[in-house]
Length: 336
Length: 297
Image 1 (cartoon, rainbow over the protein chains, first blue to last red):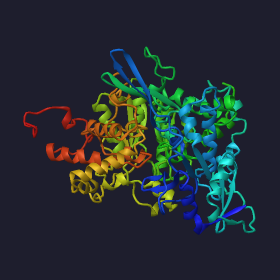
Image 2 (image 1 turned 90 degrees about the vertical axis):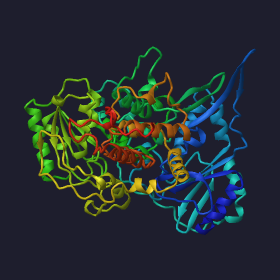
Image 3 (image 1 turned 135 degrees about the horizontal axis):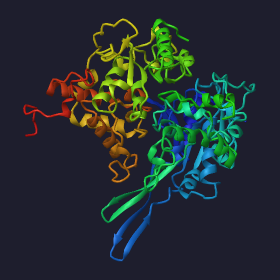
Image 4 (image 1 turned 30 degrees about the vertical axis):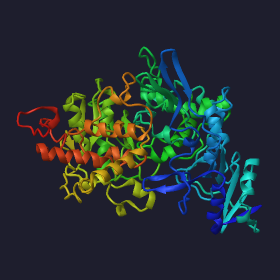
């Protein structure tokens, strides 16, 4: 298997960048995110970046089409589909992040309707994953059966070992990427396969979807939501939360329609014409968020809507901890 | 589990108040997932009162939860630090709450610690820097209470008062423009700063309105900026400078610099000492006097 020496990383990244726009984890004063690679900008810390990669496939705001009203009627001009030309390579995704992209794929590609804008971006993207030798304190991917040393679904997997990385192409796209980087790769030295990292949070999701299916009216929800601020931090940091809204920007006789991220934590999310709101309080909204991730998505697509990345746990201002919710669901009796 | 004297008193008083039927619920803090987290907790049964704690990380302001039941009848026992008590005063002044609905258990606050420093350095509590907002706190003792759970503390002289504002004021207009543009560019529009804010107590927020749409849902620098600046101006004179907006911001926007700038202006223009210091003193932008400064004339 090809071997990437630590000191060859910049040359490897340069080889990737020659094949498309290269996004890598960087550290800003306020937190970490993915940014277009520049010399020495790569920063690797345990766990995923604070801001997830989902915006690269589902931008927070995206124009859909422009319209103009003329004497003969309305003229619609569709926005350029996110061009196949915008080839992008996303480097340093952790196994949880790769699993999260697979959840998004289920929704936007396999759910019965193919979202053409999402598909164009996904097809133009290559995922270069980085296995986790160390977990952040907020990590709990194993609860959902993920292997921190593997990232099925990534085009290339890098496994950090002493002095470098084992590099494995996992798809045809990955092989193509690596073909351009042959010059900087060496041959694998004899190294032992590492042990998985230790995790601080002990949590499993065993039995949770089936149990939750009968817990819609459970008194658990009566207390759980109380401290929730009703903000959108958890949903906007979540790498699998995919909800969006479609809105118009009207400017007289012309304007455009766009879609943008939306959050089920906001009252306006379920507000209907006429003023009825089927999720009128934080209780219904919090319940829906957990049911969606831990029950509805497993029922519909066979995947959890949580990958244990720990972003919400890291940033929720009131510590409404989904790992603790998993435990609570497992502990409580189901009689109501 | 920290079991300092204040914690033990909190638990005992919560049990007494709940068991005696004087309150139906108490709101305080409990330990969270990590040792540097003390999120809000809601207690209805006396036997649950042992979950309550008082430690260096009780940053959350429990007063904002009174808004979730602002039209209710229940009486709530509320643990309040200096800043939390100012929030209660503001809610009463804004007619969001009647005084009789809360029983205030005041905690003179020695200043709290920065949980982010705890997370990133792993140092023990005593070695941690103070929480940012506590560095400037002039009112650590609750300004309104029914009982105090500890001796009052002497306010510490604030470290570098209004330093952030003064540093920004020293920059030129162009530079300030770039500074705020770069910060607001990354705003996620999660509304955590608004939702945690005791001054943001409107029953319907203009930023949520779909018709008319004041704030477009597009997340771009212009709309982010509009949101951030309008919110800051809206809470001018009502902001108690508790720093919760800045604490909760997931992308670290320096929101208190805006709030402190407005507080500084209000002090210079109206001699205003701060919001929520007593039930009588109204925010200067809530009423009008013939001799108000009128620079626009």
